[in-house]
Amino acid sequence: MRLDKLLEQEKIGSKRKVKALIKSKQVCVDGRTILDESLNVDASLQEVVVGGRKIENQTHVYYMLNKPQGIVTAVKDAKHQTVIDLIEPNDQRSGLYPVGRLDRDTEGLLLITDNGQLGYQLLLPHKKVLKRYEVIVNEPLTKADQIAFEKGIVFSDGEICKAAELIILTSSTNESRAYLDITEGKFHQVKKMFLSVGKKVTYLKRITMGPLVLDDTLALGQYRPLNQQELTSLLPYFTIHKKEKSLENEI
Ligand code: URA
Image 1 (tube, rainbow, N blue to C red):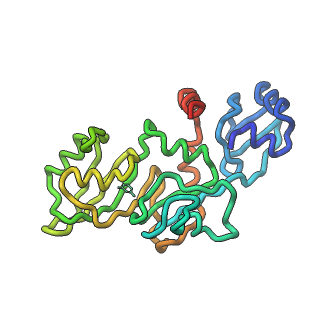
Image 2 (cartoon, rainbow, N blue to C red):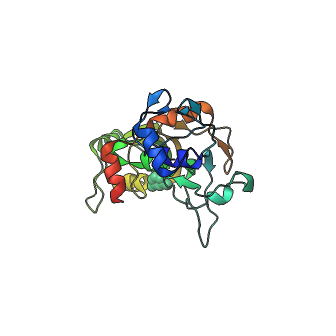
Image 3 (cartoon, rainbow, N blue to C red):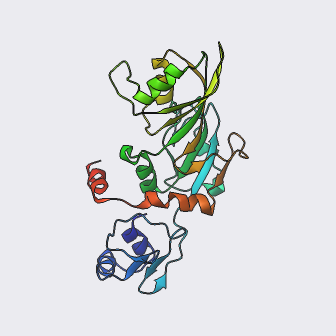
């Protein structure tokens, strides 16, 4: 949540007063004086102090979901159950949404939060947030595939993918397993990359996204709140740089 919105919500004062407090260097986040009223903050993760007073506020929720197949990555869907439908009524919040998208037949790690700015930051292409997928394909995997992925796959419509790392786990005539590390989030990207080297993905699971690693004690369809260490690891994605702010304004 924006710093100015948090302070208004906490009844620190009117919009004008909050602006004045920030300008007069009376607002600190984790010990740093903040002059940027649009900074994304979460008072449950960071220490927000105004004129010496600490703000106590459970601003946002963050859940790690192990998405099962058959569920759509959307907030609402006319035909199918959505990932938000998997969240228990007690854990529901307005504004809850999935960060990024997994296909209906893809399993694995999905971050669900009501912190819109965080999701925006994690998906910015220049942040190059690394995602690792576990992949099964219907053909052998080769050194030539690894080289092609490393050079950057070009889709048939000319779209170019950034360099990706293919780690082959097993390879045989009709079934091979691998990890694929990518830093983008193009539509159906992993499936299309393998198709470009003539292989069909038969199983896909995301196991990491940035600093988050899928908790393998979570059964398919289960979720849990992020723990303190995971929340702390996301803090670098809370900072918005000037260039990104102007981009955000354009959207
Ligand atoms: N790439 C895909 O092709 N599908 C997904 O669900 C995620 C990445």
